[in-house]
Image (cartoon, rainbow, N blue to C red; front, side, top):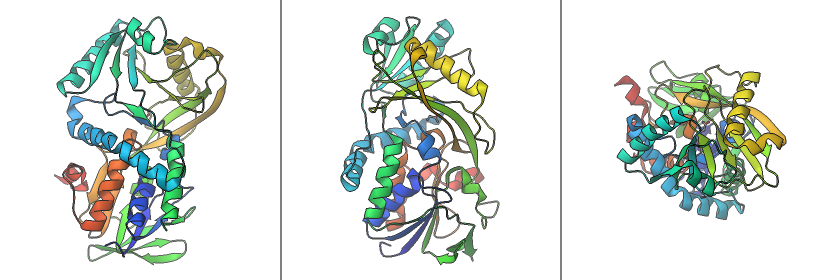
Amino acid sequence: MAHKQIIIIGGGVIGLGIGWQLAKAGASVTIYERGEAGRAASWAAAGMLAPLAEAHTEESVLLKLGCESLARYPQWVRELEADAEMSIGYRMEGTLIIGLEPDDTHQLRHLYTAQQDLGLDVEWLSGREAREIEPVLSPRVTAAIHCTTDYQVDNRQMVAALQRAYQACGGVLHENSAVERIVIENRIATSVQTQDGFQAADVVLLSAGCWSAQVDGLSETIRPPIRPVKGQMLALQMEEGIAINSVIRTVRARYPTSVYLVPRTDGRLIVGATSEEMGFDTRLTVGGVFELLRGAWEAVPGIYELPILETWAGLRPGSRDNAPILGETPVENLIYATGHYRNGILLTPITAYEIAKLILTGETSEIIAPFQLDRFSK
Ligand code: GLY
């Protein structure tokens, strides 16, 4: 398959990551991106690599996929940084999940028990012990879970690196060039239609995030059930006296929004995120920004004085069960890699390695097999 023509619809981290791996293996790859590459969910994300912090017992196959992807991060970082000749800001300081009042501690205990039942590497801390790790935490912090292996990467640097590595390997990127239709003849995907006409393909890969269901040519049975889930975010500038090294997440039993704070090496502190079913609306709201600032301020009171650098809202691509849709479809030569919801950055390595392998060899690995589209019709 290495010499064949592969068309990728969507140039976020998933499309770029798969494209890079394929182009590196010698395939002829063209990405069509409706906007600018990597400027949608990949750009809006916080870059947390946190399968443990978001673990729930009912999602154990997804947790396994997340842990496996996290395990592949060191190799991914080495390979990508070498090919792109730039850093992607991979940091391994771990994550603290904190509670601020008795109801939160109760919820934290529940999460801790579930994480332990799953055999995860987590540690229960008192408020004092949490403050020993991050002295800026509020004196109100009652308890915390330390997820020592939940890391972070700078997703915006990863976008830049992937674009560079992909193009350096010969990958072709068309920006501001949407695929209007996937052409399917006799249950075989044969080409795509763009503003410049029909482009023939041996394989069509759909990785268009929350726009995946909007591409024409897909019948109802194979249309991926993906919707946008809005997340409002902001970035603060850390200043002297506010040094944070770990990712900090709150559990707030009595508030609508739990927040996370993600410190970047360049001094930015990312604060996120709301979770709203608002279609393609990306407007910031007073309530959304207020909840983020309140949550962040309660966790780390010292942020009160910090300058706000940026505000934005992104759209997570959520599937019907909020797990990604990966692999073959009932249509020959049509592959999906979409619906990564809250875990797109975490799941990029495993998706890129395993979907590239599927396209090159025809082999679906055990780890991605549970995530095929056909699970929705079973
Ligand atoms: N993974 C963080 C978020 O979706 O907000």
